[in-house]
Image (cartoon, rainbow, N blue to C red; front, side):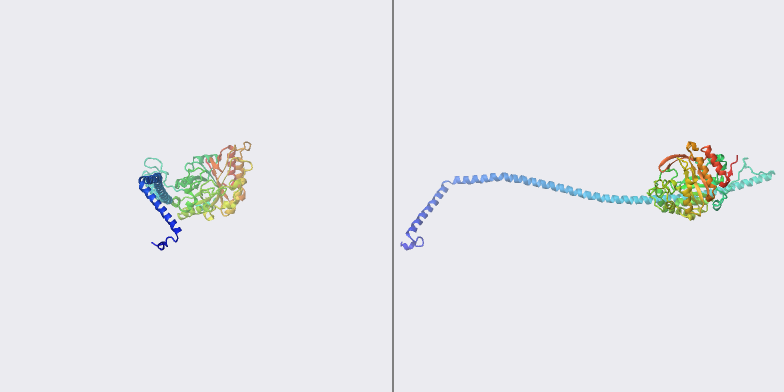
Length: 525
């Protein structure tokens, strides 16, 4: 071939020579590689297998660890899901408990409201039942009196016939058994309410433990003093019905009955003030209307006059009808102004049932000397706040004692009553005054032994002779030795008129002095 044929591959002889060398080297390398491959196939496979095995062995622990971790993660996720479910259940139970508590609280309030309504209804029903019993008792009493009258008429007719047939008479008569006959249903004579409010002289009375149901103590005191009292006092609570026999027995003995009527159970101690069922508001709201109506009707049916001292010493703090204590704190849940409203409410019920034709209403605060804040004198405004008004009060009064320990400066009429009397005369200038509950303690009854009872009694009766005290209609003396609480302190005082000969002599002399102007009924010796 010609040289022109290789022009595209080697342009010169030099290039052609290097090209041939390179080609030969390439062929040689390829031949060696092929020979290596064909001559050592097992070694190469082994090397490849070993490499694969090493890779597999290196990968297997990691995969195992990964699997274990994956399993642990799954377990933890399961436990987490279980805890979350429990949390969700606890939250649901808590929400249910809250809902149940709210429902229970609402139910409790509802039950409280229902209980209060039931208690009110019970009180009203009890009052209605009591009223029905009273009406029934009144009807039974009227029937009994009618039968007694008929029996008396028959006995009188029999006596008249017997006297006529025998030709002899008898001033007293006898029944078939031969015993004297006392005329039945002898009327009890008593002045009217108006006459009692305009007496010929001053009243003087006593409180004795058993009177007027038993007059033995009254008679004993009368024998010592020499005169029969014209007033007899007694106490009753709102847990008791009206006692017609007390009023009748008093008048049978020629004495005006003075009832201290307390809106609380009669057996409560004098230091018990927490009586929420007897709060002033409960009375004003009508919770005792049935009881009060029954009581008023019974008085009207008895048709005998009497004095009622309703809830005495209301300006103090030791009874459940007090409005507040000396520091202004509420007593028994009461509020200022409620006492007067309570009094007016009771008076209106009595008026509606005809009882006010017979009742002399006696408003009787405690003397102000010892019940002011921090030992001071009570203010006039605080004193006057409980006054219901002249329309509702027939007699203004006061309660006050010479208490232990007595001292010479306290043992006088003016020291005991002066400030309170000035308040009363300012508050109700058109009303007479009655000393509703008074007395003097006995600490030996002589100045030498530390007692000033006789001195105080002398001062008391001397003051009664002063024309400036002409508006004082009389007094009722607590003739007992009494243990009570005074400003939280327990004391026993001997208030008895005859606690000593000195006290008794002073009392007799003062009572019988003509200038004292007391109505005196001498005791038959």
